[in-house]
Image 1 (cartoon, rainbow, N blue to C red):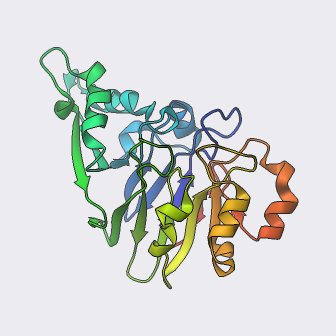
Image 2 (cartoon, helix red, strand yellow):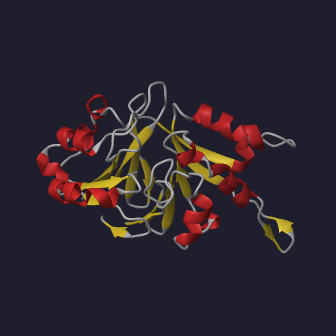
Length: 253
Protein backbone atom coordinates (compact mmCIF):
# COMPACT_ATOMS: atom_id res chain seq x y z
CA UNK A 1 0.00 0.00 0.00
CA UNK A 2 1.23 3.45 -0.94
CA UNK A 3 -0.31 6.56 0.58
CA UNK A 4 0.03 9.85 -1.30
CA UNK A 5 -0.79 12.86 0.91
CA UNK A 6 -2.17 15.38 -1.58
CA UNK A 7 -2.42 17.87 1.26
CA UNK A 8 -2.33 17.88 5.04
CA UNK A 9 -3.81 21.24 5.98
CA UNK A 10 -7.06 22.39 7.53
CA UNK A 11 -9.92 24.23 5.90
CA UNK A 12 -8.12 27.58 5.86
CA UNK A 13 -4.66 26.35 4.89
CA UNK A 14 -2.58 28.62 2.69
CA UNK A 15 0.45 26.36 2.23
CA UNK A 16 -0.47 22.69 2.74
CA UNK A 17 -3.54 22.04 0.53
CA UNK A 18 -6.57 20.38 2.06
CA UNK A 19 -6.22 17.13 3.97
CA UNK A 20 -6.91 14.75 1.05
CA UNK A 21 -5.11 11.53 0.11
CA UNK A 22 -4.71 8.93 -2.58
CA UNK A 23 -4.15 5.35 -1.46
CA UNK A 24 -2.86 2.82 -3.97
CA UNK A 25 -4.37 -0.61 -3.38
CA UNK A 26 -3.36 -3.39 -5.78
CA UNK A 27 -3.16 -0.98 -8.74
CA UNK A 28 -6.43 0.71 -7.78
CA UNK A 29 -6.45 4.33 -6.62
CA UNK A 30 -8.72 5.37 -3.76
CA UNK A 31 -9.15 9.10 -3.20
CA UNK A 32 -9.83 10.10 0.40
CA UNK A 33 -11.95 13.25 0.27
CA UNK A 34 -12.04 15.90 -2.43
CA UNK A 35 -11.58 19.41 -1.08
CA UNK A 36 -11.58 22.63 -3.05
CA UNK A 37 -7.79 22.51 -3.47
CA UNK A 38 -8.02 19.16 -5.31
CA UNK A 39 -7.70 20.74 -8.76
CA UNK A 40 -4.19 21.87 -7.71
CA UNK A 41 -3.07 19.18 -5.25
CA UNK A 42 -3.90 16.28 -7.58
CA UNK A 43 -1.65 17.34 -10.50
CA UNK A 44 1.02 18.49 -8.03
CA UNK A 45 1.22 14.82 -6.97
CA UNK A 46 1.28 13.67 -10.64
CA UNK A 47 -2.31 12.39 -10.68
CA UNK A 48 -5.36 13.36 -12.71
CA UNK A 49 -9.11 12.87 -12.37
CA UNK A 50 -9.17 9.91 -14.76
CA UNK A 51 -6.77 7.91 -12.58
CA UNK A 52 -9.21 7.68 -9.67
CA UNK A 53 -11.01 4.34 -9.21
CA UNK A 54 -12.87 5.12 -5.97
CA UNK A 55 -13.63 8.20 -3.89
CA UNK A 56 -14.39 8.09 -0.17
CA UNK A 57 -16.20 11.11 1.25
CA UNK A 58 -16.02 11.53 5.01
CA UNK A 59 -18.34 14.55 5.43
CA UNK A 60 -19.63 17.60 3.64
CA UNK A 61 -17.31 20.41 4.76
CA UNK A 62 -15.85 22.15 1.70
CA UNK A 63 -12.27 21.07 2.42
CA UNK A 64 -13.48 17.48 2.00
CA UNK A 65 -16.09 17.74 -0.73
CA UNK A 66 -15.68 21.13 -2.45
CA UNK A 67 -13.74 19.67 -5.39
CA UNK A 68 -15.95 16.62 -5.94
CA UNK A 69 -18.29 18.16 -8.50
CA UNK A 70 -15.40 19.16 -10.78
CA UNK A 71 -13.91 15.66 -10.51
CA UNK A 72 -17.25 14.02 -11.33
CA UNK A 73 -17.98 16.35 -14.24
CA UNK A 74 -14.47 16.07 -15.70
CA UNK A 75 -14.68 12.27 -15.71
CA UNK A 76 -18.17 12.24 -17.21
CA UNK A 77 -17.47 14.69 -20.03
CA UNK A 78 -14.76 12.66 -21.69
CA UNK A 79 -14.52 12.37 -25.45
CA UNK A 80 -12.68 9.82 -27.60
CA UNK A 81 -12.42 10.45 -31.33
CA UNK A 82 -15.08 13.10 -30.99
CA UNK A 83 -17.56 10.78 -29.24
CA UNK A 84 -18.79 11.15 -25.69
CA UNK A 85 -17.17 8.42 -23.56
CA UNK A 86 -18.32 9.12 -20.01
CA UNK A 87 -16.61 7.71 -16.93
CA UNK A 88 -18.84 7.36 -13.91
CA UNK A 89 -17.30 8.07 -10.50
CA UNK A 90 -17.62 5.41 -7.81
CA UNK A 91 -18.14 7.00 -4.40
CA UNK A 92 -17.82 5.10 -1.12
CA UNK A 93 -19.86 6.69 1.64
CA UNK A 94 -21.46 5.89 4.99
CA UNK A 95 -25.11 5.08 4.38
CA UNK A 96 -26.17 7.92 6.70
CA UNK A 97 -24.49 10.51 4.46
CA UNK A 98 -25.61 9.42 1.00
CA UNK A 99 -28.89 11.38 0.84
CA UNK A 100 -27.15 14.63 1.83
CA UNK A 101 -24.29 13.98 -0.60
CA UNK A 102 -26.69 13.30 -3.47
CA UNK A 103 -28.59 16.48 -2.64
CA UNK A 104 -25.31 18.44 -2.57
CA UNK A 105 -24.27 17.14 -5.99
CA UNK A 106 -27.78 17.30 -7.34
CA UNK A 107 -27.83 21.09 -7.05
CA UNK A 108 -25.66 21.19 -10.16
CA UNK A 109 -25.99 17.72 -11.73
CA UNK A 110 -29.77 17.20 -11.73
CA UNK A 111 -30.63 18.93 -15.00
CA UNK A 112 -30.96 18.35 -18.75
CA UNK A 113 -32.66 15.03 -18.08
CA UNK A 114 -29.78 13.67 -15.99
CA UNK A 115 -29.50 12.97 -12.28
CA UNK A 116 -26.60 12.36 -9.93
CA UNK A 117 -26.93 8.63 -10.60
CA UNK A 118 -26.02 9.18 -14.24
CA UNK A 119 -22.68 10.59 -13.10
CA UNK A 120 -21.92 8.48 -10.02
CA UNK A 121 -22.20 5.00 -8.59
CA UNK A 122 -22.51 4.84 -4.80
CA UNK A 123 -21.20 2.13 -2.50
CA UNK A 124 -23.11 2.48 0.77
CA UNK A 125 -21.49 1.08 3.89
CA UNK A 126 -22.85 0.51 7.36
CA UNK A 127 -20.58 0.56 10.41
CA UNK A 128 -18.08 -2.27 10.18
CA UNK A 129 -19.37 -3.52 6.81
CA UNK A 130 -16.29 -4.39 4.74
CA UNK A 131 -15.77 -3.38 1.13
CA UNK A 132 -13.00 -5.26 -0.64
CA UNK A 133 -10.44 -3.61 -2.91
CA UNK A 134 -7.93 -6.21 -4.06
CA UNK A 135 -6.56 -7.89 -0.94
CA UNK A 136 -7.61 -4.98 1.28
CA UNK A 137 -10.73 -4.52 3.36
CA UNK A 138 -12.21 -1.03 3.79
CA UNK A 139 -14.77 -0.33 6.53
CA UNK A 140 -16.25 2.93 7.77
CA UNK A 141 -16.23 4.26 11.34
CA UNK A 142 -19.21 6.45 12.22
CA UNK A 143 -18.05 9.70 13.85
CA UNK A 144 -21.35 11.59 13.57
CA UNK A 145 -21.59 14.44 16.12
CA UNK A 146 -17.97 13.91 17.20
CA UNK A 147 -16.52 16.44 14.75
CA UNK A 148 -19.33 18.98 15.04
CA UNK A 149 -22.74 18.66 16.67
CA UNK A 150 -25.34 17.65 14.11
CA UNK A 151 -22.79 16.81 11.42
CA UNK A 152 -22.74 13.35 9.84
CA UNK A 153 -19.14 12.21 9.41
CA UNK A 154 -17.01 9.07 9.20
CA UNK A 155 -13.47 7.77 9.41
CA UNK A 156 -12.35 4.35 8.25
CA UNK A 157 -10.22 1.30 8.90
CA UNK A 158 -8.22 -0.22 6.05
CA UNK A 159 -6.85 -3.72 6.54
CA UNK A 160 -4.70 -6.32 4.82
CA UNK A 161 -4.29 -9.86 6.14
CA UNK A 162 -1.54 -8.88 8.56
CA UNK A 163 -1.82 -5.12 9.19
CA UNK A 164 -4.24 -2.20 9.24
CA UNK A 165 -4.48 1.56 9.50
CA UNK A 166 -7.11 3.64 11.30
CA UNK A 167 -8.07 7.02 9.80
CA UNK A 168 -9.92 9.38 12.11
CA UNK A 169 -11.35 11.77 9.57
CA UNK A 170 -12.11 15.07 11.30
CA UNK A 171 -12.90 14.68 14.99
CA UNK A 172 -13.00 16.58 18.27
CA UNK A 173 -14.62 14.35 20.87
CA UNK A 174 -12.21 11.43 20.93
CA UNK A 175 -13.56 9.88 24.11
CA UNK A 176 -17.15 9.71 22.87
CA UNK A 177 -16.04 8.47 19.46
CA UNK A 178 -14.03 5.69 21.13
CA UNK A 179 -11.64 5.39 18.19
CA UNK A 180 -9.26 3.30 20.25
CA UNK A 181 -11.67 0.36 20.03
CA UNK A 182 -10.67 0.05 16.37
CA UNK A 183 -6.95 -0.19 17.17
CA UNK A 184 -5.58 -3.70 17.60
CA UNK A 185 -2.29 -5.61 17.58
CA UNK A 186 -2.15 -5.36 13.79
CA UNK A 187 -2.60 -1.55 13.63
CA UNK A 188 0.54 0.04 12.22
CA UNK A 189 -0.69 3.62 11.81
CA UNK A 190 -3.34 5.92 13.25
CA UNK A 191 -3.97 8.89 10.95
CA UNK A 192 -5.26 11.50 13.37
CA UNK A 193 -6.24 15.12 12.78
CA UNK A 194 -4.29 17.27 15.23
CA UNK A 195 -4.55 20.98 16.00
CA UNK A 196 -1.63 22.69 17.71
CA UNK A 197 -3.87 25.50 18.99
CA UNK A 198 -7.37 25.45 20.47
CA UNK A 199 -9.95 24.32 17.92
CA UNK A 200 -13.66 23.83 18.49
CA UNK A 201 -14.02 20.93 16.04
CA UNK A 202 -10.59 19.26 16.02
CA UNK A 203 -8.67 17.53 18.78
CA UNK A 204 -5.62 19.39 20.04
CA UNK A 205 -2.24 17.73 20.45
CA UNK A 206 -2.79 17.59 24.21
CA UNK A 207 -6.21 15.95 23.76
CA UNK A 208 -4.78 13.38 21.36
CA UNK A 209 -1.91 12.47 23.68
CA UNK A 210 -4.22 12.26 26.68
CA UNK A 211 -6.68 10.03 24.85
CA UNK A 212 -4.39 7.46 23.24
CA UNK A 213 -2.26 5.18 25.45
CA UNK A 214 1.42 6.12 25.40
CA UNK A 215 2.19 2.85 23.62
CA UNK A 216 0.20 4.12 20.63
CA UNK A 217 1.91 7.49 20.29
CA UNK A 218 4.66 6.25 17.98
CA UNK A 219 2.12 5.04 15.41
CA UNK A 220 0.15 8.30 15.34
CA UNK A 221 0.49 10.20 12.05
CA UNK A 222 -0.67 13.78 12.62
CA UNK A 223 -2.63 15.36 9.76
CA UNK A 224 -5.03 18.25 9.12
CA UNK A 225 -2.74 20.48 11.15
CA UNK A 226 -1.91 24.20 11.38
CA UNK A 227 0.24 25.80 8.67
CA UNK A 228 2.74 26.81 11.35
CA UNK A 229 3.26 23.25 12.62
CA UNK A 230 7.03 23.75 12.46
CA UNK A 231 6.68 26.18 15.37
CA UNK A 232 5.72 23.17 17.49
CA UNK A 233 8.65 20.97 16.50
CA UNK A 234 9.80 20.45 20.09
CA UNK A 235 6.32 19.42 21.24
CA UNK A 236 6.01 17.00 18.32
CA UNK A 237 9.38 15.40 19.02
CA UNK A 238 8.60 15.10 22.73
CA UNK A 239 5.28 13.44 21.92
CA UNK A 240 7.00 10.94 19.57
CA UNK A 241 4.28 11.30 16.97
CA UNK A 242 4.91 11.83 13.26
CA UNK A 243 3.74 14.57 10.95
CA UNK A 244 2.36 13.51 7.60
CA UNK A 245 4.11 15.68 5.01
CA UNK A 246 2.38 16.93 1.88
CA UNK A 247 3.38 14.86 -1.20
CA UNK A 248 5.74 12.70 0.87
CA UNK A 249 4.73 9.17 -0.12
CA UNK A 250 4.21 6.64 2.67
CA UNK A 251 4.59 2.89 2.24
CA UNK A 252 3.00 1.35 5.29
CA UNK A 253 1.33 -2.04 4.70
